[in-house]
Image (cartoon, rainbow, N blue to C red; front, side, top):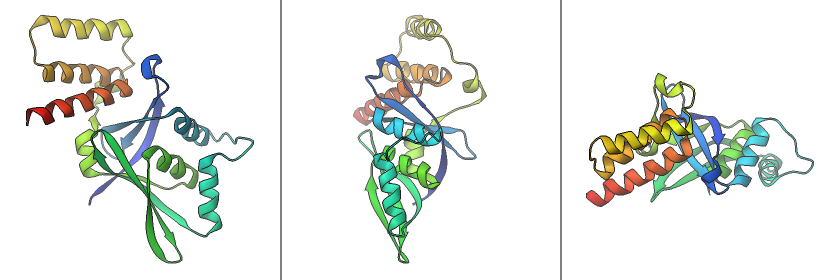
Length: 199
C-alpha cells in the first residue's frame, strides 16, 4: 500500500457545525487537502499541542504518549489507511523491543498523539485519491464573504438547470475557494454517495 505524507494545515469550524471541527491535512509536495470532521475535545487536544500550551494536568493523549515512552515504545508514524462509508480509519505504528506493531485508532486520536511525539502522518494514496480536495493558487485567495458564496451559488443554480451532481460539484468548488473545508467535506461525501447510487 502506498502512503503519502501530510502536514496539519489547520483546524476550522463554523457556527452551523454543532460543535464539530474540520482537521485539514495537506499533502506534502502536492496540492491536495484532506478535511476530516472531528470532535471538539480532539480538536482542542491537537490545538493545545500545536500551540505548545501545557495544561495543568495531563490530557488523555498526554497519558498515551507517556505510556509509550515509559514502556520504551517508539511511535514511528500514524497512517490514515481507510475510508469506509464516510468514516476514516487510522493506525498508530510503533516499535517495541525490536518488534513492529500497530494499534487501530480514530484519525483524530492518532494525529493528537503524532503531534505530541513528533511522528510523521501519512495517508494512503487510495484515501487521498478518493477524499482529497485539490487546491490551486485561486483557492489561496482571501476567503469569500458569506453573501458572495450564497449569491454565486444562487446564480449558478438559477442560470441553467443542472443535475444534482453538477450542482454539488459547483458548491464544492465554491466551498474550496472560500476555504470552508468542513462544508467541502460534507459536499464531497454527498457527491461520493450520489456517484455510488448511480453505479
